[in-house]
Image (tube, rainbow, N blue to C red; front, top):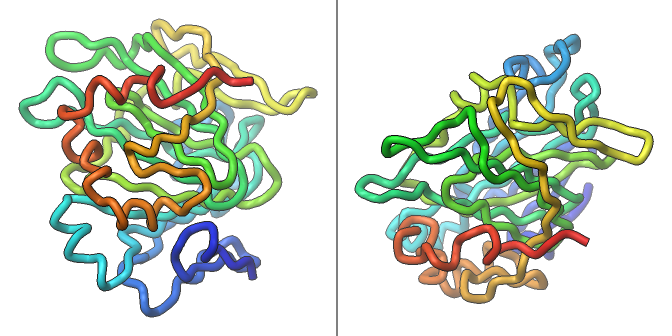
Length: 272
C-alpha cells in the first residue's frame, strides 16, 4: 500500500492492484473504469486483450467541510489511475476528449491536472476555429507536455487532451475542472485517436502522426510552469492550495476573465 496523503493532501492510498483506497470520511469518489475495449476506436493497433483493465476514475472527491464551497464555485475534483502497459505498440493512454465552448463565449473551458505519483505525458491539440466552432480535422497547435510528480499542468481553452503513461508504474493524477459542462469524446473517436500516437521505440518513445487528420503540425515538447496566480504550487497539493484560495480557481469556470493568461505560452515552458 502506497500512502498518497502527503502528495494529494487527502487521506488516500494506492493499493497493490492499482486501485485508490479513499478514506471513508471523504465524500464522492465513486469509481468507474475503462478497459481496452473502450479504447478500440482510438487505438493505432487492433485491440486483442479487450477485457484488460486500463484505468480507473474517481469523480468528485472532497472533504465534507469543503462541499459547499466547491459546489458554489462550480468546481469538481477528480482522481485517475492509469495502469502501466501497452496498447499494441502504443503506451497506455486515456480515451481523450475536448471541452465545449462556454455559452456566449468564444473559448472552451480549461482544466488543470496534478501528477500525484508517477509521470504523465499530456498530448494537447488545438483544432482550427471555423464558422463559430472548430474544424477538428485540422490541428494548428500540438504539444506533448511532460509532467512529473508534484507538478501541475493547465489544459488551456480550445485544446483537446489525452494522457499517456509511458512508465512501468501506475500513474496517479488529480484534476480540478468546472462542473458546468460535460466532456466531448466524439471527435477524438471519429478521428481514431489524437493527431499523433505515442509509441514504443529503441530510445523510449516516438511520435507517429495519425493519418485520419487532414493536417497536424510537428509536436513540440513542453513542461509546465508553476503558477501561483492560479494556486498551482509544485511543493503543495493542488487540493490544499485550491481550497485555501478558491477564488484563484475562477479561471476554470470563467475562463473569459483570464484569456490573456491561459494561452499555451503562458502556462508552459519549452521542454529541455
